[in-house]
Image (cartoon, rainbow, N blue to C red):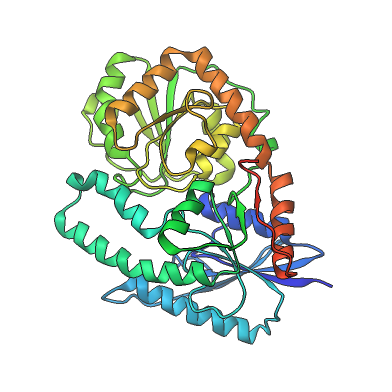
Length: 392
């Protein structure tokens, strides 16, 4: 008998990459003879349909009007109401699996497995404080007020969860510290990677090409402000170096001669990303705040050398100087040193890439999603058992 499975998400777009990619992959992995998957999410853009049916899932999008004050909080509360109403009309049965992301299960009285936020609220504020001089005072106050309200909502959601999916052990410890989440069964990490899609890519002849991926124009959170500071020195030291920026086009705050060596592509579909990994020499990841992004995992699967900031949990994926170069976030000099080291030592950087590839193989989708499904089924069968396939 086919059972229903519900995935609660902030939004969904097929072939969207990032978190959308996780939703799509988990729906594909769980759909079929055993589960009929339904994705419940917000309508993010006017062009999106309220209802779509794919081979692997039905997608239901809820639309909300904008509120003049505290819009994000109001949307969370309205989404909770919509989800509860939908489940009631859909004849939800106890024992049907719900996997939810972030605050989407707020107010849900059913059992659910929560995919924990990339960073707890107070961790986010602490990390963003590193760039306080780049943020207007009023914006900092508004952000602090906004996120302290979200703190109590996050705390309620994670404490009410039946089980939790974390990106790393570091992510789990941060949630325990801030929300007192003790004793709940957990699964680590929060996504798998299709190794076969990346690993056999023939490498083209390359110059010194750096790859920076930021799909939204968040220069501070994504660390582009630090990349801007070092690019003149970097481009002077390496006359053949270029930067490919995958993401929405933006005007980089660098001298004109530097801007000519930056190619901003605009948004790139998930199924086209491997072309950029193939054409690059180094992935540069310099965020102040981030979970473990798909970009890092895909670069590992592509055997692309990586320079990354020390975001929470990244050391569980990449060992410094063995799987990649990790520098202290917010340190522009450290970022420059990391990129220079990798460019000056191509043999060592490729050895690191080989090592990171060996690490990421344990998270191959063919292994990951069956284990996650078993974890979810065991939780609902009353046989909770935590599993960490990242650090085992």
